[in-house]
Every structure is written in C-alpha cells, then in structure tokens.
Image: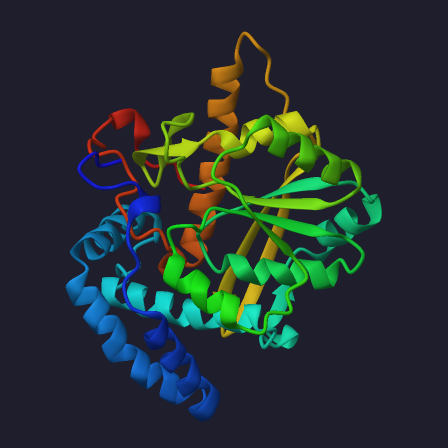
Length: 315
C-alpha cells in the first residue's frame, strides 16, 4: 500500500446527499435510461476531479490486463460509470425496490446446503460487485438471520441518505471498527443459533492490524487477517460470496471455502498466509469475470510491486 496515501477509511466522500438524492429522483421519475444520461456528466466530473481514485483505477486495470486473455484493457472512465450504476442499485436494495427477478443464484445447491444444514456460518465478501445485493440471500434463506459487519463511519454522507430511506432490508448491519473479545463472543452466540455472519475480506484495518502480504493480480498486496482469525474462533464453515452484474442481472455465486479454519500455534502465520492467498486467488478469478466491478478506488497494492515471485498464476 502506498504510504503517502491516507488509509481507505480516511478518504473523504465526494458529492453531497443532495446530489445523490437528485440522481435517485431522476431515476424514479424518468427511469434508468435518463438516469444513465445524467450520470455521465456527474461521473465525468468525479473522474476528472479525483486524481487518486483515477490513478487507483488505472493501476488496477493495468494489473488485470494480463489476465484477460488478449482482450482490450477496459476504460478507466467506464470503470467509474459502472461504479455510479452500482450506487443506484445499492440504494434500490435498501429501499426494497430491486426486483428479485433480476437476481440469479448461480450455485443453488450450495445455498440449499446452507439452508438444510441449519448451521451457522461465516460468509466472506469483497468490494467486487454489489455487496448489498447479498441481502437477497436473506430472502432466499427465509428462516436464517443475517448479520453484516460493516465499517462505514467514513461514509457519513451516504449513511445519512441511507437513514432517510424507507429501508425494509431483513439483514442487520453491525458497525465494527475492530473485533474485540466482546464482539467475538456475541458473534459466536449468533453462529451457535444458526445465524450467518457476513464480513468483507479485502479491506485492511485502520490501526496497524494484522495483514498478510499476498500475490493479487501478480503484485504484492496486503489483505487483512481479521476475517480469517474470526472464522477460526467461531469454529464454523466459511463460504465465499460474490455478486456480479452480468447481462443486466445480478449473479450471486456462493462457494464453500472451508468446513472449518484451524490454525496451529506454531505455524499460525504461515497457515493464515496460505488461507488468505487462497481467498486472493478466488478474488482474482471473479475480477476476470467482471473486470469493471472492482470498487476499491484507493492505493490498494504495496508501492513496490516488482517481486518476481509474485507474478501472475493463471486460474
């Protein structure tokens, strides 16, 4: 991670609540086509005025290019447009306005297995695709409680708008800045009651938390250990969930990551690194499926990424 850049949680939002509400109103009155026309100049301004985000987008796309089997590198500006489109869908999810017919579960047998097992589980997500659509999992698993761990205190403007919306989501959002023993105990009780805990695995902690340096898109990147340590403490199955927009529908992929993560005391660091590298490989795979849906617009990789041992490994 570039040390000259602030931590992702300290990056201020661009735009205002009024601007977001105006775009939402445009959609509600005129529909998606006109919304897209209005979105274009809005995202053009954001693209031109936010150099760090623009450079982060270009870096990601340049690292991804060798994985796209000779395909032309996607445009950075299109990357921003896709982000704006996702924000609208995020708002629609929280308002309960996203049509369930536009959501498709690509791995129904895995989802049915979670439901029939009656066991609690930890679900690892990422900032690839639209995390909020995972609320659809709650409707698919009607009798299962869903808790989503979030760290969104930095997004005050967006949170302000979300609080004003008539949200009918069935998932509970739990603000967690750090995983304290009390939080771990509370989550353990929920797992024992057969609940699902959702946590992102691709955002590093703000205050010098534990990380593993792994290969991601052929370059050295820090990924947090917190979610994996939590999984080992909860002693439960771990699943990966990716929600990608494909052909104007949201495709939800759920796959078993581990029946249980166990790390021995003597080789704990090495075993954590192996598990997190495995997660990074799956993240790479789905980045190739939806190149423009990676929404980490900050300096994600280490500044020096010339380690030859971290060159890409084709899936």
